[in-house]
Length: 162
View 1 (cartoon, rainbow, N blue to C red):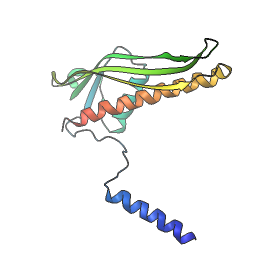
View 2 (cartoon, one colour):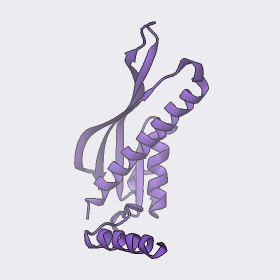
View 3 (cartoon, rainbow, N blue to C red):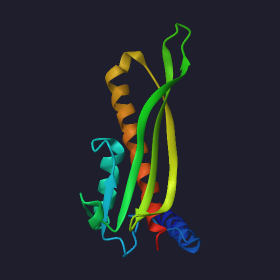
């Protein structure tokens, strides 16, 4: 019986290899981009923290001087919040929608190479009033996950500079 489990795992691995599956890993930025400046009004937002983490993980230097940067990411909107999706029969919120919206443009040598665009991601979660601390933490985790996904989308856009 042990050999059938191994055969199954081996067959799955071969199928994944045959279809071209690869773990996503880190996004590779173009070699022409060695320094990036992120122009934003809020350097403490979850999106900014996630974007700087992704950029540094790719070996690119963050610079405070936009003139010294190979590319500039201009973030004009970095907004997050939540909306009530449903309420209980006692008129207490039962479900929330957490959203994160980012508007940005990418400039290279002072010229806009990617026009300003807006990205919005959202996820919903159920709310239980007896678990306020846990649900607050869950909302923060969702917000950070949305920021990480948005940072990944922006860096994939940077990768298109190749």
